[in-house]
View 1 (spheres, rainbow, N blue to C red):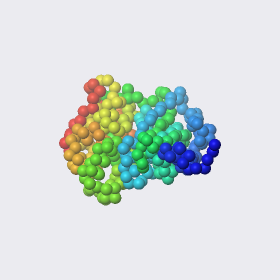
View 2 (view 1 turned 180 degrees about the vertical axis):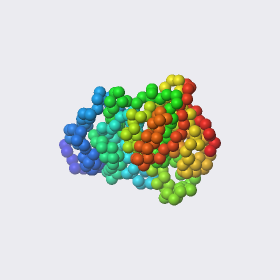
View 3 (view 1 turned 45 degrees about the horizontal axis):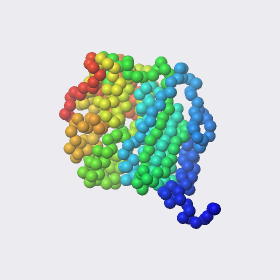
View 4 (view 1 turned 60 degrees about the vertical axis):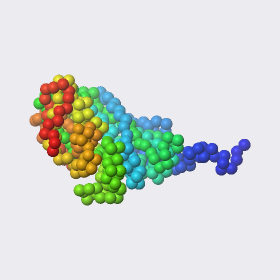
Length: 349
């Protein structure tokens, strides 16, 4: 028999507040509505998201990728700034399909937390929506999960899935990377979304800094440095995508771990470590954490967020497109005969 006794609300007592969930969903629905494009179909809040394939792509192939922002969310939680990690997530995923020559056509986010705070959830998704709008891509759906026995109070996790499309003949797989190609490195906007488990330990535990402290050798706060948004390279690469032979998004595993993924058998990539300046924040963290150079290479991007391989005669055009989009580049190496490895030279800067 129904009762108004609050003790009868067993789900709330178990840690799941359906009222908070409805409030969050209403706020998120407004954000989702703001990302819809002419390709959007169906309605917001349906069981699945619908989006039309672009009519101007010949022999379209869908490109899908799923990723997260790792423990960078713990920095957002510690600082109380939740509106940037969602944009990080979108840009990271956009880059992951961009390296295949694909343009984004739809995004889905997954937000999971111990106890749902509608304001925090809305801030996170606001960042996701901002990233989607910047790429003319609808946020076609997602999931907001409240799981009190999985996450501690105040914690959350964030992941996303992107759908892109590319004409089959224009897809970039790396098989065209050839001996004699040059390597163009694109400047990162910060630490992006990798290495944060080590980064947090060094900055907060070993250096003893707080979010509002000034980051050493800079005029920025620790929060500003650590929460700098992961750069999207879409605008910098899209106009010249047909001129590049291979693209590597520099994420977990660093330059070596990701550049090797696009090298065909028979060639090596030679990276000149002195070809670009090591960012101040990287230098500070390496010194304070007493991190060996080989580990810095494996954990952090070292200031390079994307690497393009191209013919020498196309390098100027590739670099001009990046400059036109406000992204600095450097010639960071070349492709030589080899066995699919990444070799470092000019080390020890």
